[in-house]
Length: 244
Image (cartoon, rainbow, N blue to C red; front, side, top):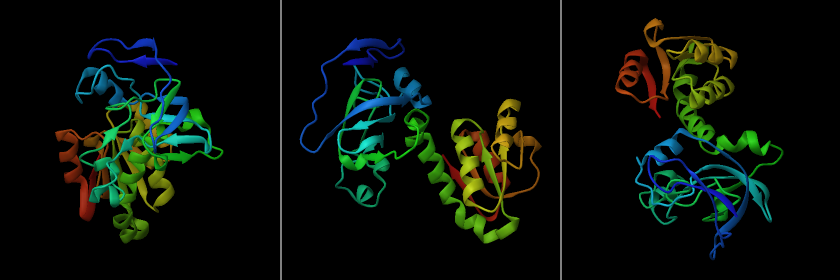
């Protein structure tokens, strides 16, 4: 099969031919349709995760399974034995392995998935446009879901703030608009991202210094010291701050 491989940190990826992967007992084979490029892939290439080399990167994967048809791959694979896995938080498993970071990922024509539970049927969703949903989409959805109790408590007066209107932040804005009856604001230094946030349904967008008032829920998609400090400064009493 054709694949793209990381052979040395800080160096360009290399196009290679590799033997078709053979799934072991309990594993599943997927023919890759599309794979998104996540900023974490750049961290992998820079060696920030200490990934084993050579490695086929890519963790935002959609493909075709022989029985399930078009599927999305959930990339964090837990040990399936610890209490975190049992609680549905396999992405936090201390013995977990993530496709594209520590296991061969989706920059290839085929990939092996550890268990069928990590395959989600796509239905009628476009497989190319859907590829980032398994990472950026789910990350932002989980963050937005954590805020719903605080927003519903405030009813029609609720205000939510998304810090960082990049890829994940744009998902976050849309989820908050769909799930909560709240004003949704975006904070970002980029005028272009502010404009995009408003296109996606944000009530308003500005730099962090230009914001007015407090918010019942703040989701920080940047996670820098300055943005975390801004989140704490802006959150209302009995509100919630979610750091992504």
